[in-house]
Length: 443
Image (cartoon, rainbow, N blue to C red; front, side, top):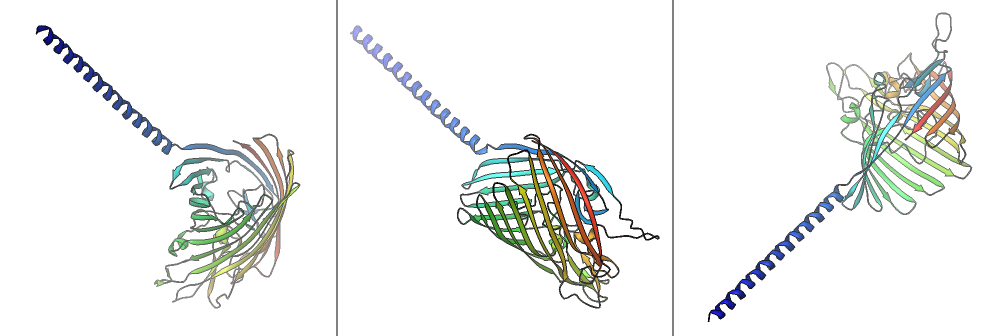
């Protein structure tokens, strides 16, 4: 009997030990599973939040000599219009005088950012700045160039932020050395915008965008007071050896909320439409790029033009947009050698405003007017047309060091200001030759 009790007691003890061991094993497995889940979630979260950042930029030094006084931006690092003659009491032209300068303000730094997928789209961003400043008085100050985010699906891209204006065609740009990018013959602008790009097939795509003005106008109020953004539509064909496209922009400004004193509500607007055609052919010895533009209120694109206001006592002002025509062509040698040659030539014509209002005081508006190159005021002077020829040479010393040199010959035809903004009569061709050397250290 005692032996039976002992056997029963031992059996119960063994069963307890086995049960405890099994429970411990289950707890261990649960902890292991929980740890695995935590590790998996952490890895997934890390994967989702991963952002890759690449820095880029260049240090740039510009040295340039002008044979005549110029109208330009950024202490004339952006050369625009050779100045009209200004005669002293002895009949000597005051503006027939040379100028020399050196700057490093267009040295640039930026970051390219690649983010995680969002809504099935790859995300990218660009943040870029330079030391050009936002105003003439602010040169050497850091300013924003690009702050742009894109979402890329298989055939669709959505872009939001500040970037090149859609009229600035990156696939078809003049390859000039100076910072004007072909202005005032070609568009120069960066804008806050929302842009949608849709691929139709391997070669064709459509670009639709809305944008506003920021840095490239002396006054953003007329753009903001219109209550509407500028709209853009473009179709482009692109292959390895050929690029071509058509683009159009429609813009509405409201220059004034009221006119006169005492004030009268002014609901008049400036409506403008701009059309652009461009093409680039790429061959082994030569790349040829060209563009023609029919623009209205071209001052929005830092080109020759603007709009004209007509005022009279006791009533609100009326407005007319100015018309501009331009064309340019650029030849660039394509070579693997260290030295490459190029040539740019272009012309821009001030066509003035249609149907100017007579018997009123006329005043022109826009960045071109603020620089003094366009006027509709009686007794003033206005540029009627401008042409430019620019041969250049590039010398790549290494992957990081590059020298670029060009000789820019620019002729601006000045005339007496008309009430439509043109310059006609008492013509004078102001000629400037710029010798420009730019040195780059790229990183």
